[in-house]
Image (cartoon, rainbow, N blue to C red; front, top):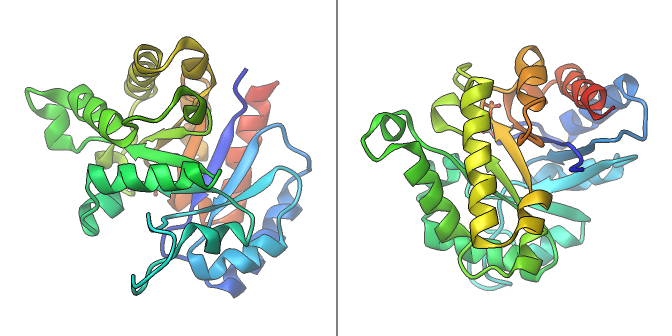
Length: 255
Ligand code: PGA
């Protein structure tokens, strides 16, 4: 059985001081240990503060990394800078990185390889725009391309460390959520893709997260779908209370 992963992507929010208050409030809402794995991905500068507050099943993630180990890359962060703070996961290819910062499938693939070589766990984000969903080619073709390019030549062994987040771009930060049926249909498609391109064991093991306006009011319906193993949460992860509520829902469904 796959364990739920409830992941907060804070994006460009929360100073170190705000991070401290968040964790203090979060621990007042939760009883540890939890059955679900809880992941917080703060901005880089708040990672050391978040690290001080890790407990129970809470782990730390980064929102991005550079593919190279070191060098003249002004403004970038390398993998070893993250491992020093016990960062376990790295989000790769978030749609905001793709659209606002010009990250291509090739660059995302390089980052995935770097993260895997460093023995951290990449969370590969895939998702289609509304126009792509409505086009003749459709959403499945977009997701298939992003999976094939992002995960090219990754061994079945390494695939076990990968998490995939399906985040329809039309649902991110818009308040618009994919219906549980739409989300499940795409998650099932991704699992079939893993089955065909790796093997059944990998397809059964890899966790598939849903992202896009996931919040306490819609989490139960989405998380109870067979192929949805957790969430990558933006807005609702910024408030300790709503994030704790999402964890509580996952805990309830784990029983
Ligand atoms: P959202 O963001 O929950 O605010 O829609 C999700 C994400 O971008 O990962």
